[in-house]
Image (tube, rainbow over the protein chains, first blue to last red):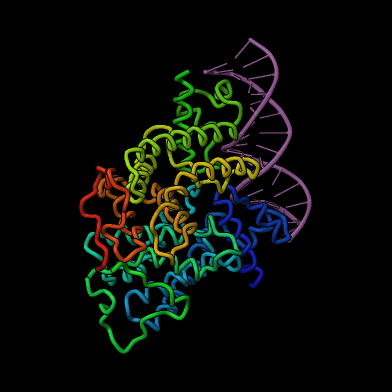
Length: 210
Length: 210
DNA sequence: CCTACCGATCGGTAGG
DNA sequence: CCTACCGATCGGTAGG
């Protein structure tokens, strides 16, 4: 039973690094210490394996992000909490919760349809957050959300440990994406009695041209 | 001689859509109206084909972007011109200049090294532009540039024609990424005697919280 | 540019 | 979980 979990994690890492097609069943099996054919004692097919990993990763990510957002009600604070958590997930080299989303180029069309449906469902979290932001009218919320998710989901392709932490990168992204709608920006988050800024990296963020 | 160009364009389209590994020589050949083996009259190897397409695409893109920037000297205007042109290139379904960059996951390691070197060279264009921007001190220019390039380079993965044009998407990205350093933001672009805003989609862009 | 083929590798199965 | 194998597909070559 935990052997299976091990296999899922090995496969997730390989899928994330090389994509669906370029990851072979035999390579997964070898890293799990068995022969290619033996893997089919644990899995039904390569396609089913990929779908299961993707589903589990997104479910786990959704749970973690909702938990991270829970303490906040102010829109920008919720966005920051969600983005930070998402980056922690995407940039963590361990565990199943890995960047397999958005790497669908070599996935068979029928499978892709299933993955995209699941991913769209996952992204409603961000849809809700973005819709609540007091953005300037010139910004298209759909594009805003898509762009933000692109950055979060593809961060693993350029990130290498050492320079900035996931939380620091989240801060940079938030600094860029933070635009207030109203002129009375500093105090425009009206919801009271709740925390306004997340714990991580909060300080040197606000710098609205005034 | 133009037959070869045809093959390069067909291959570029397939590589962009499915990635290196998932694109077969036989599929390229079939779309070019010949047998798999016949393709080797025109190319040396699959690897060489990919490298050539990548090189040509980046050279052409660099040329177009430099030309688009040429009329401007104000930093933000140069950035907008470069981003708009880059998106026109990335979102144009025709021609060789296609989004093959950043899809290196299934490319053999040795080839990847060559591609990355070329891409880094290409991206110096944006390095120069970003270094000239009057950004607030809280923003890390390296991260800023990386994030911006991610959005430009991966736009093809979510773009579908109909809603917004490449130029309109560029405007959205620029609106998000525009942050002024100084408090006297509106007039802080000191360079005079030169055009300040590009021709495309300029109007409804500025909306700094004041 | 085609035919015909090479060795290698793929996902998957049978039988134990 | 292994051995041994299946049909399919891969990049590439020889010989024309």
